[in-house]
Image 1 (cartoon, chains in turn red, yellow):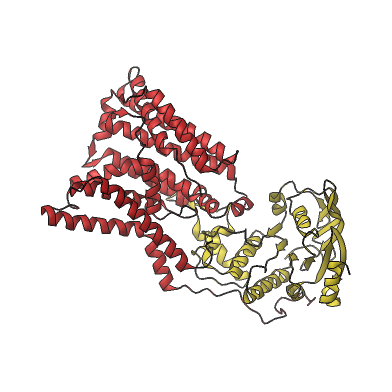
Image 2 (cartoon, chains in turn orange, blue):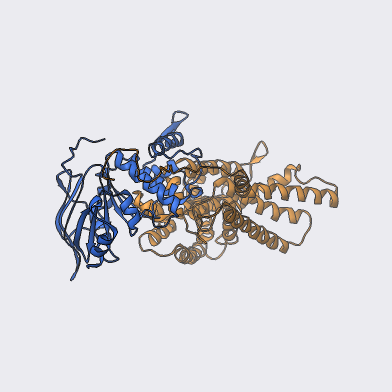
Amino acid sequence: MTSTSPAQPAEKHVAPQADHGDPARSLVARIAEGRAWLFLAGLLICFEIWSRLAFGATFVLNPFNLQSIAIFAVAPLLLATGQTFVIISGGIDLSLGFIMGLAAVIAAHATNMAGAAIPLPLAMLAGILASVIVAGVPGIINGLLISRLKVPPFIGTLGMFGVARGAAFLLAGGTTVPVQNSWFALLGNGKFYGVPYLVLITAVFVIVMHYLLSQTRFGQHNYAIGANVQAARRAGIDIRGHILRLYVLSAMCAGLGGALYAARFTAGAAQAGEPLLLDSVAAVVIGGASLFGGSGTIFGTVAGALVIAVIQYGLVFVNVEPFWQFIAVGVVIIISVLIDQAQRRFSGARQDE
Amino acid sequence: MNSTNQNTPLLEVRNLSKHFGAVRALNDFSMAVRPGEVVALAGDNGAGKTTLIKAISGVFQPTGGEILLRGQPVTFATPQEAREKGIETIYQDLALADNLSIGANIFLGREPMRKAFGFLPVLDRKAMAEAAKATMGRLDFHVSRLEAPVSNFSGGQRQAVAIGRAVYWDAQILIMDEPTAALGVPEQRKVISLIHQLKAQGRGVIFISHNLQDIFAVSDRIVVLRRGVQAGERKISETNHDEVVKLRVGG
């Protein structure tokens, strides 16, 4: 055994190769991956049947319905895109709802103030910019707490939830802040060939975020950190810098959500995002991400957000008491997680139990 | 594979010490690894094996002594510096991001980029997959599912991916900490055969294991540590299990 000649190991040579794809397994994995879109299709079919039986009218082919669902989905989806990044990294951001409220109030104030000095369209842009930048501040604090001071994300962002909430109500003076800017109102309620501006802006934003997550080093490192922080650190990834940027990014998504909220309702309200936080987490989970980190996609989250919007809007449309919405969304979340668990068990072995 | 002549050790450790307060975790320890040589490091828990590899891989600063790479004294402030100089440590199960492909793992932290549509920088997955295929081929590991996450692979295959990453970045010294510990017997054989490949490519390997069978299957020499000092060094061809066990426990 002291010889250095290459091909004569002591035992019979065993190539480390047993690389068989199992078709059944990959089918299950594919179904689990696309489950949010399957849910969405199933829901649309259910509501279509229900609507035809109950009112003899179409649900899906009615453009007004589609528009309303899309508008419904905009705000939770904006929060959920940022949340997707955070959850993939293995964290969670509970402060997003009130960062959105804070941003809505800032957008209203800034647009009004700027409107006194500069033309209205510029004032609108200044208002949006101000709200997104201000939203970044709690994001920076979240990121520093989590990356430098090792505060668990759940606790750190829960603290920021309270701080942003208080700050938003203080800035709003405890009420809603109306916006006087016709351009801003147009942005929030106007349409381009039947598609609301809000939906267009969100669609473009979602595509940019998809690019960031799936095609850049930032996105790749995000997945790696979520799966194995140790490995990522050993590979030379700057974990602290990454986490900081991550929470700033998610806060700025909420900032944009707040600005668009203020545009839609021509008013900023501190409680704008309050009910949306859990919807955003739900959208990410229904979309196929694991709360343990390491998996998830932006388009999955889009489907998740649409599932929630369809349930909420559809149940109202077919005249069911609104409280059933909560139950329906809850059931979908649970089924979604069950599918995820089953798929993990099925694809076997390497997941920790 | 490399220009170093066979007499200059790739890596030499001279009189290395690491003290934690009054505890002498490693004391006046010397060893060398030559190109194409596999040196096994044996010793009971707490004998100083981990301290030694952490000192060599830049995790700890040694209290005394020196480390020479191809005859040149070096110091590493961080594990990153050691890696840049060609010393790669492969840990048992902490090395890979399970949800990423082989290529993505090989390039983790240094991903190649290309320009889509002539302007948009995107990850060059094709280049990663091709490099992965070529590299794993050099280790006699032929994969068809280059896009599959490494969680789909077996323990031995994952170990091969970790080794493949070191090979791709041209590590000359591989420190392998218990590479076979978590594996079943057939998988252990695969890892042993990988180590033979590394040896054939002229790299130096420091192989840490509790398993004497593995040590005797793959190593050229064995260095035994006991309570932070070198308890003995033997050529594998000139020793046997009993003697190594005696060295370990101090009989």
